[in-house]
Image 1 (tube, helix red, strand yellow):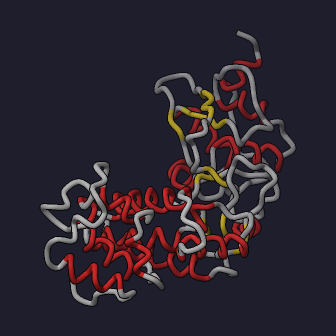
Image 2: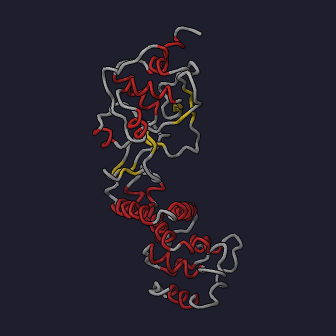
Image 3: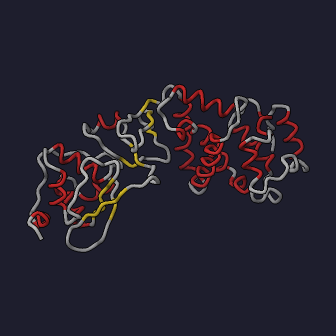
Length: 326
């Protein structure tokens, strides 16, 4: 073993310049900033951190991250000047093999790791971050609610976050969602997943100019050209999430329409929660909501309207009104 690979045996002390970690920041991103602030190569810091593979990727923090065992993480806390527990609560730490000696390995992100973002520029300024950083997004959507900004994805190194104030309905919906997560903890995760699938399929469907919801998204995207589609659609996604979280039985509509809520009941609720300006459009055969409610068997779209209150709901929707009692 070379002398370089044994640097982890030397005693450590806090580096002269202390660097404050960002919430959810990746370990290698923090190591990179720590080295830059102290004018020390990241590779040298890694050599003092523990045993590794012997190669570094100092400029590709959007592709790799570090996995540390407990002893290597302890040495990182010594270098940073922060105690282990608060540092572990702030950083996004990946653990690797246990035991002695201190060791680190590399974790390569794949296309499925879509929850990594650039930090909010306003938050970075607050933490005096001047070097490129990478964080795990703090929520299910890449949004900084504190400053009302959409976070840039990690796959675009030159992208920057963008203010969401031109579309205030996004921030309003997100504040409602934070309250919903506290009140409906048992159902909100499944509700949000299902709602996201519906709006994603809706965005891919060719519904034309008559689709008022799709037109909302187009108008919103024109105001926010660099914001990702999931953020653009988030008010409608959160509206459907609220519907499913409050009425979990509606999640079973595509599978058991004859034993519980029917597609008509779901459409009436959806029209109300989406504040749809023309509810009869939800009854069109190409409607994404109707397509989801019918399930995989796709029966003829008028067949479920054979029992009360389905007939009255159908009539109300056809007349462009939303039933007040279901």
